[in-house]
Length: 153
Image 1: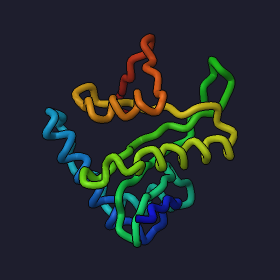
Image 2: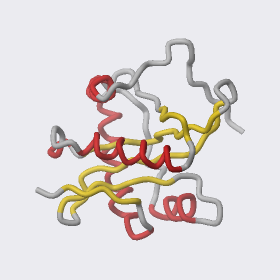
Image 3: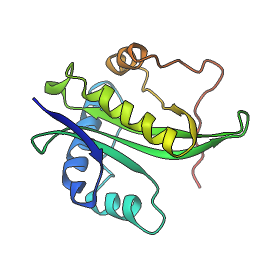
């Protein structure tokens, strides 16, 4: 099996949205209240418009999508450095333990380095223990002093 990772493209819209909806269904099974707002039209507008809000990678085997990672740039004033936020990471259940998640995170880390970012960061839905074990296994560290917060505008 030859697994490849490449940057996402416009023509990946259906595959990425399909996997995003799989991810959402999985999160809902854990108690989240995720709703399917991410559509192919939004993927194209927000990911490939004049001011892209995100980038990403898709992992494939023989052009069959196995997983994806979306990311967005950020800046850390305290450390005075760029960072890269991993927005979404989904690996299809039947492809887990094949290194797909690690390959996607490696691609994000490489992209972060090439764009001058000092680190990757992400959030984990607390009931998602599979994700937490994966992130612990690749050396991810919790940020004990911070809580994510939101404010609608």
